[in-house]
Every structure is written in structure tokens, then in C-alpha cells.
Length: 581
Image (cartoon, rainbow, N blue to C red; front, side):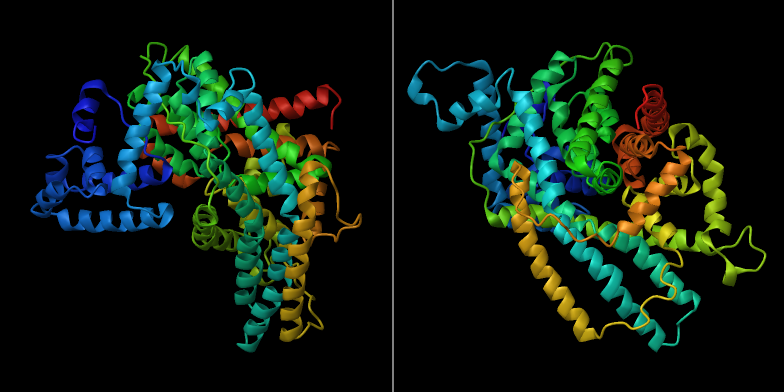
């Protein structure tokens, strides 16, 4: 199998999916190979990337003699070290296992065992988990459990990080600025009202994301995610979609950019384009904090249910769009078989769970340290530049700034959707850069000049450290005690501490109440749906352009904006007609 994979793939047009982690490294090596024309002209990029990861000595020797070969080999060594740290074993032995797993999956699809002693324990469990009728409900229950676990259990650590950023950390930074003689200057406003308010408003959601990634890592490492793809394969075939397309969609729950690169495993070009057009409707990790914040504001009694509904709605919209495109644009597309390996169920290791959780969380933190930091800086500058205030920057407020003027131009477009305020419009415009920026924008807008007159008698540094440690211990205890809530047993005290973000949440609720003329819940729901449907982020557009081409990138961008407006309009105006909200 190893020596004939390339020849077979050229004749029959298929590729074997080696799993998310390995496929990401293959794509990375392919991109490097494509930059060296002399190498890419002699070898197919994917085949060569696989051979290099398997450390084929003959291929390595041939590559060394070519220009750019050393650079490619160095990159491959980095990829091998990265994958070895994930799996704890050499990839040159794991990849053949994946190929034989594919063969095993093909055999399972095309043969039937009559001897009972060939039925394993995993096979018996699969009779339930991949059942023709019960498989999809079980999958939905699993995903609901993930979101309920994430939203209910993480609140204590959410409040702890919020306290650390908004109180001790902000006090320390303000004290340093004062010590350097910058108190009351634009430097203090930039750091406190711009960077800390913007980035800090997003960082408070780190515990939420860590628990989400932990839950997804458990499902992946236990072997259930492969079953989910198998179960959804049946539904998607019934709806006229290709089952293998669900694999990039699952990746889309983590990051839309990675999901676009995952479409490379689809052999048929039309399959790849269709799947790429549906991938953005899968709610990535960046949208999750927006759902949590707004569901906590407008639906505090049903937070986990609303968050689950957003993810389910994204899948439903993707299926509906897929059906429409299958019967119109992609009407004559040829089908291709979908074979997936169902690995045996296994107990996830703590090392693997931690690695997957931290890998995804650190990617989010890198986002916060770069894109969100830049976006916060740009927003602060726009909020500082006076437009309607003739007294200059010193007496400028958000309402008289350039940011408000720009946001006000877009506000009428969102008025029929129930959130036609300049604050919400500005957050959505800023959210084009990244969905995390939606929250940081609200934090900056409503936090502008909020620190004035605060901290008249601040605690000492030692007292702050004591409070941080004490609150961390209390958050750990409350988290353990809150786990039974997931199954309906409440062990927490009835009176919980009011979160630091109560003022922000209350202000957002008031603004949506005014903008929707007394229907804030409907407006909040329409806002979440708009965030779900419209363009994920600039990085995803770049990946979409690279994988699907410029024309399809623009089709996706414009189509998502139009669809987001239409669906949000139906939700808000339809809710008003039905007397809801």
C-alpha cells in the first residue's frame, strides 16, 4: 500500500485523510514545496510531503540535491518533532497504520462478518452510537452536553480572570504609568481604555474556551468524533451532500482557517468548492464567547441551550445551503465513495488532552496578542479622534468621535434587525477582522472613561496578590462543586457573587432595549444569528481565496452578509408579528 498510494491516487482520484494534526503538517509542507518550482515540477506536492514525513531515505537524498531541498527537510524535521510531541510515537509508523485503517474501513463497508467471535466490544457499542435512527440524536445530545458543561462549569474561573484583569492588573498598570509621569495623559487612556479594555474583554473568556476544547479533545481522542462523521455521512447523503465533507466541518468548530485547509482531502474539485462554501457556517471558537456573553445577557436561564442552538442552527443553514447548491450550481457533480476508519474506543490520556486543549487555546492567545491588540489600538484611535467636538481631543468622548460617526453610517442598515445602534453596528464592523473583536469593541465603547475617579484608596500589592490567590482557590472549589449542575444537581449556594461584567452586560441590555423599542431579547437573538452567519474573519477569507479562488471567496463573502441580514430580519420581525420578546 505504501509504495503504490501515489499511482493509485492518480488513477482513481482519492486521498487518504491522516487526521487533523497530520493533515495540517502535510498542508504546511505542501505550501513550502509549491514555492520551489524545481521540486514541485518533479514530484506531486502531497505525495512528496507524505514521503518526507515517513522519512523515506531515497526521497530525502534526491531532495537534498535540489535547490531549496534543505529548507524543506528542515521544515519536515520541525513537523516531525511537533507530531511526535502530540502522539508520543514516530509518524513513519503511524501513517501506515492510518492507511491500513482506511483499508479496514473499506473492508467494513463492503463485507459482512457471520462469525460472532469477530464482533469486538467497540462493534457492540457502535451498534448503538452509529445506529441508523439513534445515531444523530445521540450526536446532538453529546454536543448539547459539551455546551452545557462548558457554560455551567466555567463561570467561577470566568469571574476570577475578570477580577484579575479589571482590578489588580489594571491598578498595577495604572500605578506604573503614574510612576512614570503619564497619569492623565493620552498614554494612560491608550493603555487602560484601549489595550486593557479591548484585549482584557476577550481574555476573560479563556476558561470558557479551555473547557470547550477539553470537551472536544475528549470526544476526539476517545474515538467518538470519527463516529460522528460516520453518522452524519448517512444524513448528508440523504440530503444530497457528500459524507466526507463533514470532516472539514467538524474542524470548523475549532477554526475556520484550518477547516478550509482540511478541504484538501476532498478529491473532487466541486466537492471541495461546495464544502468550502458551507464551512463558514460552522461556529468557530472565536464566535463562542459572543454566544456566551449575549445568551447570559438576554437568556440567563437558558444559556447552554441557546449556545447549543446557535451551533445547531449553523449546521441546519449549511445543510439548507448545500441542498440549494446541489440542485442548482452543482447539479451535475459526480459522487465519490466515503470510507472512514472507525478506531476502537480508548481512554484519552491526560497528556494528549492537555496538549490538544493548550494548542488550541494558545492559538487563541496568539490572536489576542496580535490581531485583537491591533484592532483595540485602531478602535482607541478612532474613539479618540474628535469629529463632532470642536474642543479637541482633551474633551472628546466616544459619542463625538470618528468611531461613532463611522458606525452611525451603518446603523440604519441594522435598524430593521432590532440592533440599529451605533455601538452594535461598530462592533459588527470591527468583527470583520475577527469575531473576538466584537466583545472587545463593546468593552472599549462602554468602558471609555469608566476608570476616572476609581481606585482612590487602592489595596497594596501584597493585598492584591492575596486576593488573587484566595479567589483562585475559591474558583477551583466552586468549579468542582458546579460540575453536578450539568446533570441537574445544584450543590452551589443559592446566592452567587455578581460578576464584574454586570455593568457591561446591563449596559448592553439597555442599549438593545432602546434600539429594539422594548424587545431586547429578540434583538439579542438576531444579533447572535448575524454573528453566526456573516464573515468569520479576515484570516479565513485569505484561506478561502487560497483554496477556492478569488471568485468563490467574493461569492461567499457577499452571500454570507446578505444571508445574515435576511435571517436576522426574519427572526426579529417575525418575532414581533408573533408577539414574542
